[in-house]
Image 1 (cartoon, helix red, strand yellow):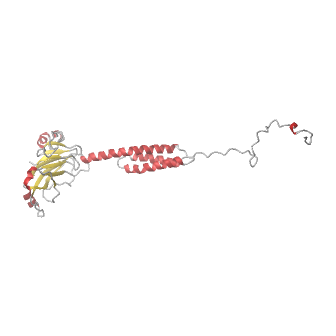
Image 2 (image 1 turned 90 degrees about the vertical axis):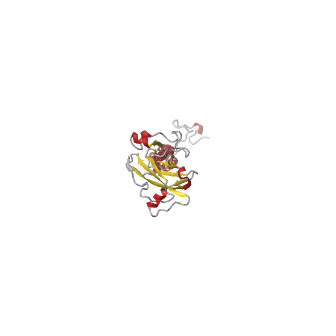
Image 3 (image 1 turned 180 degrees about the vertical axis):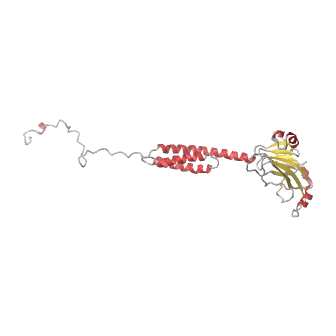
Length: 302
C-alpha cells in the first residue's frame, strides 16, 4: 500500500532526533511540562519544644526541696506532650525525643529525691541518735548536757537503759543532737502536792497515787527560730502498764512548760505528775525520750 506520495509506510523517513518508543510527557496547561508533586517541608515542632521545657523544669523542681510537687505535676505533662509531638506529621521529632528522654529521667530521679527528703525529715524529727550521760560527770566536765560526759547509747552501755530490767540510774541525762533531758528527782508523796497545787485537781483513783517527776530540758541545737521542748516521759509500772502525765489533768505552779520557745543553751525545769499503782509505785521505771520520735531510755525512780 502506498500513500499519496507513492511511498510505502515503512519507507517513510523517521525523525532521527526523537525515538518513537518514548512518548513525550504531556504538556501542562500553558505549555509547561508536568513535574512530580513536591513534599511538604518539615516544620518546627512547637509541641515538642513545650514538652522539652516542661520536662527540664519538672526534673529540676522534682530535685528541689519545697518544690517537689510542682515537679511531679510537670513531668506527666511533659511525657504526654512528648508522645503527642512524636505523632504529629511533618514536624521535627528530635526535640520531642529529647523531651521524652528527659521526662523519663525525671520520673526516675523524683522518687529517689523524695525518699532522701523524707529520710532527712525523719532524722530531724528524731534529733539524731539518743545517748546518755551522767549528770555528775557532766557538772565536772563543763555542765549538764556536755558531750564530754556522753557514754553512748543505752544499747552500747552494757545494755543499761535499753530495758526495764536494767534501767539507768536516776539523774542520768538522756540526749540527742537537739535536746538534753535530765530526770532530777521523783517525789512519791505526790498526793499532798497535787491537793495543794490547785483546788480543781482531783484526787487519785482508789488503789492509785500520784508521783511527781522533776526534770530539766536543755536545747542544744542552734535553731534561729528556737524550739519547744517536746519531751516524752512515761511511767511504766511493775506489771508493764504505761501511764502518761496527760492521763489525769493536774495543774501545779511548777508544772513542766513544754510550750515556751527556747534557744540554744537555754533550759526549762518543771514537774510532771503521774497516777501510778499505790502498792508498787517505787517498783516502776521511767521511759524517757528527748524528742517525741527519739529512742527510748529507761531510768530508775530512785
